[in-house]
Length: 126
Image (tube, rainbow, N blue to C red; front, top):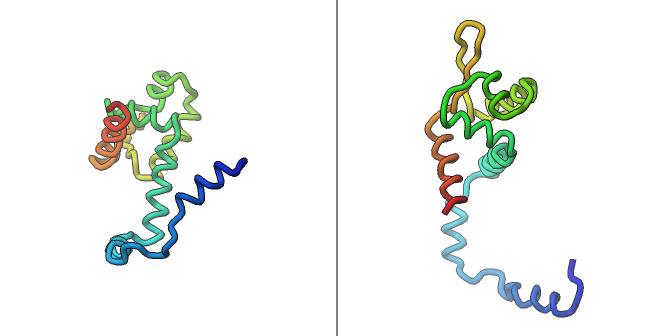
């Protein structure tokens, strides 16, 4: 919300006075833009990754395959809440599971997930 004339002038100064400045750039970028459905899926992925609990679970799974019990103990959470978050991560194809007897082990789904996660940490740390 604009509160005073100074803010109004700053907003007005930042607006373009022409509709298209670099037509060739706009044409090129428009051709490269993914479909709206793909963009929505990427946004959904970032929403899923944007949850602190899911980030903690993924960080643990980057280190080692783990079962729900071990994740719950490590993160100081209930098995029920860990299971819920793992379900979300599995539906998003970020984690996979395997069964060994009665125990279900979870791990990172593939190298893409590992790369996304590692690059996010590198970006934040640098």
